[in-house]
Length: 260
Image (cartoon, rainbow, N blue to C red; front, side):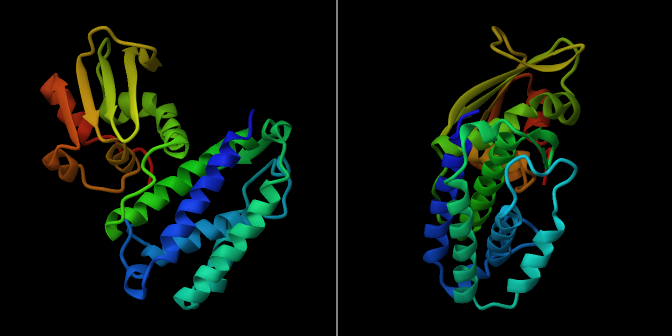
């Protein structure tokens, strides 16, 4: 595996740093799309996970991910004022980036425990890109500061959702046997994804005549898939629409959530 995930994770870190650097005290307290976290909470979470990773070589986690370290880090910074919290965030990210700079492509292929079970370290880093990018949008949306909605990081984050499309379409949406569905992302990331139910739901390369087409703004699609926003908002403002089977289309628009 290449070092693409490391490059994308660095890009996420750049973008979040620039966002946090421009916030005033009121903005740090804005509720994010995550119900339990304001902007401070999201920043603490991002730093805490990277802090958890520091010091352990790729491939060294064979049995579990030490998520207990996340809570310990957050407990240590939660009483900090916003300036000190930003300084602690930057200190952690700087240390993590220095460590990642020495990684090799071969290390990305090493087996590793991840939040989704045994995978490779490269897949773990791709999941970190997904988490970082979604959490950035968790902050940007409520703050009214749009940004970083396209490019390689957004593409990689959406890849994680595409991997789960058979579950989303087959289980959450419940597309019937023999039916096919196209998800058409209209921007900022443009992509078409196709799922066919043939015994079980599976991603296919193309569908000549899908039974339903779901059209969606790519950021809204990601936020819906992550359970961050009420589907009614993007349905009402046109960020999500459908054609073909109207009943299946509406059910799809309202049933994308597969994680939180």
